[in-house]
Every structure is written in C-alpha cells, then in structure tokens.
Length: 284
Image 1 (tube, helix red, strand yellow):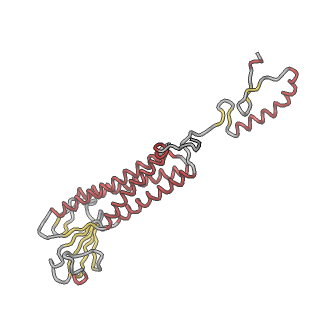
Image 2 (cartoon, helix red, strand yellow):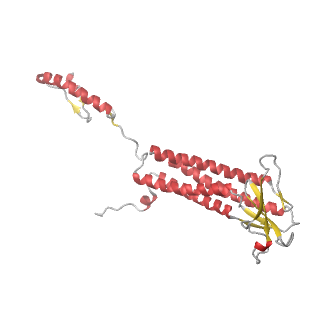
Image 3 (cartoon, rainbow, N blue to C red):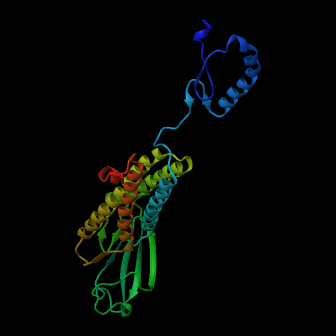
C-alpha cells in the first residue's frame, strides 16, 4: 500500500517512500521539506500545475514597445492636424471680383465648420493680376460670427447665397465622431504600453482607421456643402478656393489610416515579412 505512494518535490519529480531504516531521517527532514514547499507556493509554483506562465504573444518585448511608440507618434501627428483643421475657419474662401462693389475696398469671406469671418480688404493690397478679392490673409477689418446651425437651425447667407445646414451639420458631426475615436484609440495605446498587453493594439487600430475615414468623409461632405452654397444663387459671381484647413484635414486622414495600419501589423502574432521571407539557417 505504501509502496505506491509518491511525493513530488519542488521540481515536479516523484520521490519514493523512505526505507524502514531511514524513518527517523525522513522525520528530521520533514521540516525542511515543509519549508521548501511553502517557499514554492510563495514563488508562484504549484505541485499540481507546475510553473505559472503567461500565454505566448500577450506580452511585448522592448523592440515591440519601441515600434508601438513610433506608430503612436505618427497617430499623434494625425490627431494634432485634425484638431488644428477642425478648430480653424480657413476651410474655404469666397470672394467676388475686386471691382464688383467699389474701387477701394472689397469683401472676402472665409469659413469653417463652426463660424464664418467677413473681411474687408483694400484693393491696393491685392495682387494686380488677381481678379477676385483676396486672399483672406491680407490685412483688413474682420468680423466673425458663429453659425446658427446648432442653436436655432437657421441658414447663413453670404453674397446672396444660402447655405445648406444639413450638409454643414453632417460634416461637423463626422469631425466630432472622428475626434472621439481618436481619444478611444489613444486610451487603448496607453493601456497597451502601461499593461504591456499587445491585445489593446487591435481596437486601437480600428479606432484610428475609422477616425481617418471619417475625417476624409467630412471633407467630401463639406465640399458638397460648398458647391450647394454656390449653386443656390447666381446673381453675384463668387470665386471659391479651398484653404489650408482642408489641407490639414486631408493629411490628417491619411496619417491616421497609416497609423492604424501600423498598429494592426504590430498586433499580428507573426510579422508578415517573416511569413513571406522565412529565416534560413546558416548551415543550409
């Protein structure tokens, strides 16, 4: 009966029963074995389950952490450009011919998602080869007002042309949704770096890719809103020119998509280059 009884030590090896003549020695070593088993439990080892190990692929190495930080820097550049473009009102500039009103001053309007600014420019400051009034960066008296799309639902009138509030509101909402997704993606990357868990890269990549797509959609919707504004009335000829805020948004959308794809590649269990070009042994 006692011959079939086995005891496992700290290394998981089976130890047979002591001989009849060594009963006393076993009794003396019992305390030491008990202390060894207690130390094994405190160090995370179990006599039944062996050593506790994390699942492979769930932790990151220093090389992976450096790559994630580099991709996060790329995504942050896209976020900064998006905030800069959404917060400024230089999306498009509208200007009539510089000789349409009088020979000394002419008005120019530049607008964004939230407000428009009417600027009175001096004709003498405008390039003689330019037919329309502008650009809006020239010095002059400026008057900025916020759109009433989000408060009373009223359309704005510029040069006898009426805006289409549904398109403007849609562009603004798409931009806000993209900012929310950027914040969620940044939170996922922060969790991945602090907890050292690669799993958080997958939702972060989805958030950044979707935010970039929404930014580009907001640009397209805003372009449709500008063309609808110009087509609403033809009594006053108006020249339109998309400005640097839209350029920031276009670059931001592309950078965010690239950053999301980088996070997706880093989240893969195996590098695509290693699959396409397997490592060859030097002996072969």
